[in-house]
Image (cartoon, rainbow, N blue to C red; front, side):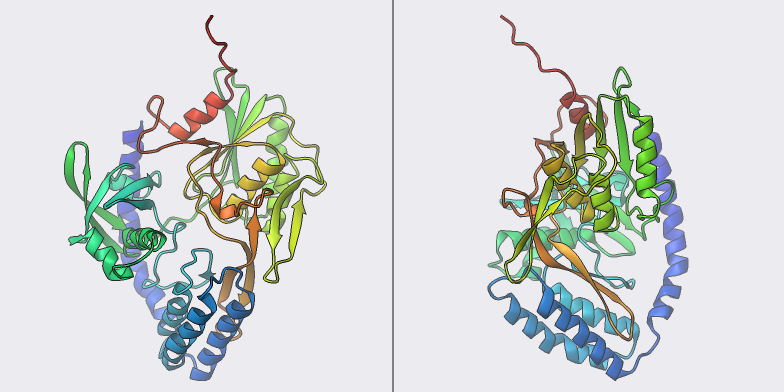
Length: 423
């Protein structure tokens, strides 16, 4: 069944590539519309001032680096002859923050992929080995045959360590090297990413066809029953679900699953609800009103405690939440809140690790929307939310259990009664 689904995914990918080649020039022409230099200057300054005044994660030298970014990128923005060149200048300045939670609403075919939302590979350095930790299910890399546990040897024909060193310099910190590796493996928006990899069976070459992702469609929530007795509910928030109708649909689903003894809430590969209001409304369906679920800290160091709002009577059964490297943004907030306020057990891998609570600023002329974390967020014990880890960790490179979904397998085991030791 899995191979049949992979074959269907390969066919769909081929069709997407054909469409991407046909559609890409249209997007390029739209991005080439000229704008006055004064408009470019005012938009760049609006972006720079918003970050300078409101960004919550400047490190010790961060403000100095941000001022240097202004000096380096503002002249390019002012001199930009096209909207495409102007956007590249904005992206160049924001890239100096090294923060995947900072984004612009407009993209071009030249824009770098966002980590992790626009990628399907998560990797890190293990000594001198570039190890693959996770591959997005049915993504381009999965279809091409990349697996967790593989070691990357070459990217586009170049030694992977040399390619990362060229991006970071020889003395980069481990976090910077990991980030550069993930950016390298994200590859181009269109075209082929060629990898040489090694596993226990030997080396092999892969060509990963990169194309625009298909938009999410269908109902915002999928639900059914699982387990031998069909007495455990399973519900999944669709990726990038719009808030419209999501709470009403959730109430209907919980009504249908009211007689279950527990729920599995799947937040994997999801951007979660679109707003904090929706996150709070969802939490109210699982945790008691007034329960604390996270801490937020402003730039001046003032902390506030977020609590669950009044809502429907919370679901009374046990909760297990599935997370992975593509559980990001509001989905991370929801996963953390369910763990803190509803005592859910989290199963899977570490999440995306995006930082903070977002603020939106619209640039005055281009109307591009800038999003950036303006408040730090913490678990109730003071742990930064970006350091959230599952209660039951699953190693995707060496999963336990039978074939299939190793994270779901461990979630189902969490509902089994504890075994009595033999006497």
